[in-house]
Amino acid sequence: MLRNAFEPWHLVLIILAFVLLFGSKKLPDMARGLGRSMRILKSEAKALQDDGPADAPGQETAAKPATEPHPEPSARH
Image (cartoon, rainbow, N blue to C red; front, side, top):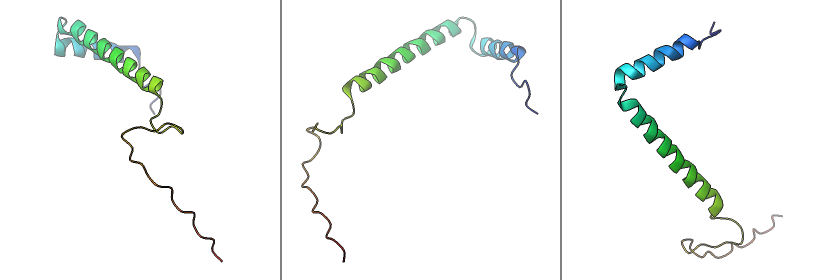
């Protein structure tokens, strides 16, 4: 039913629609802005990975309140 649903001429129509809607002068600026956004996203994601998870064992953060250990549950008979 959806065999060969996306063909090369579909891509041509999509590009033509973008050029007609946004104009040929605005498209390079949009692509440049998209590239900058992707670079920022990539650098932020890498920074998050470098920082590591905040709740890793052995690490305590100042934002976490100190909690007392929970008493062990009593054995049921």
